[in-house]
Length: 272
Image (cartoon, rainbow, N blue to C red; front, side, top):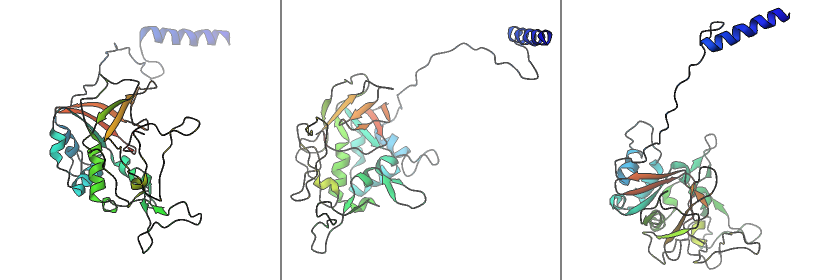
């Protein structure tokens, strides 16, 4: 038995040293490792990048921005805004807008889920559940469930002045002025219109961030100054983060006219 063990050991060692086949299986050869970095330049404008992966993609089925493009068209926002220089652009993948259950067809995540439609009574007042406090809501199913004004303002908020990327990102928040005018207010067909946004941190007694909704007198829904916060996280992969809430899924894409960041989760359009 010891002799057989020594014979097999010798065959394995011999095979490893010679790089030959053993039992009909070729051993993997060593190759030198060549370090490379993906080029973030896309050699096109942010608008071209959006449209080429939108509802009429250059590559079949690459419709990652289809629902964003449809929303921009509904809001009648001039796509020339995505060709201007000196800006940063947040593009929303389909999942950031709506995630639909393949079996039931129900929206389960994304903006349409996080800013649901508020059910109203015949007189136009909010329909509340039995507790008298919680409004009855449903996920949006189409862009027309929101007003054009609100959708337009939402997308204006996702374009901000200044070229922001990994080269100048800080661990602390940096505020940028967006194209959203200061004082813009969301209309009241969805929960977004009842969100209370502030110019200073909104924290609970334990110091944690909270979202506040006022279903009595309403809210503003958008950052009062039309500003957005961006920072880099000191964590795995060091992702960029929007408004201390949403991590950027693909960041630092360098277009011909600025920097593009792609988000696949809901952007809450206020800093605090």
